[in-house]
Length: 174
Image (cartoon, rainbow, N blue to C red; front, side, top):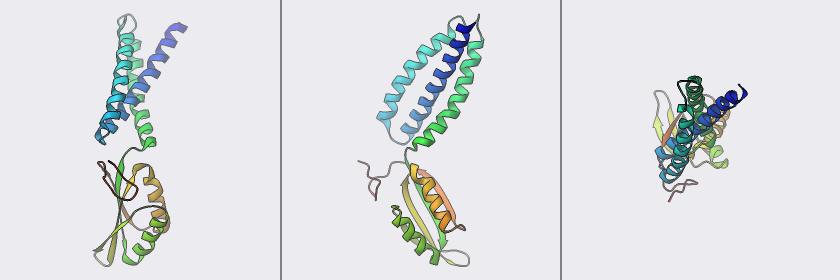
């Protein structure tokens, strides 16, 4: 009985790890990091083959392995997305729309905190506006948003994922 519990636990943990690798691989590939994604994929498949052969061995006499495997897959998706968010691969485009007079102060603060900002003049329904555009590493998104909201709580902020950025302040990619 103890051996079965250990096997179930091992199947679960390894499946969570394997799906976490898969999530990371997919994100890397979609962000243009093909080589890193391919290397992770190599190890992911080795783990999958060993794991699936363990699950399928005598599956009719122990169908509980399939449930544990499936639970590991589900939890792995959840853990994988959290892990990927923590890694924060990639670049985002963060746009902030503020009143013109607020944009000058906000731009200065953002630049003083190491963010590159491009300012575009615009017109809202009632006021002149500044549209602040930043391409930043995804890891810094929350910091930028907190800084903006602390300085200017009534702003419009949009964040969009972007493919690799070439050039720019602090975002060099060869």
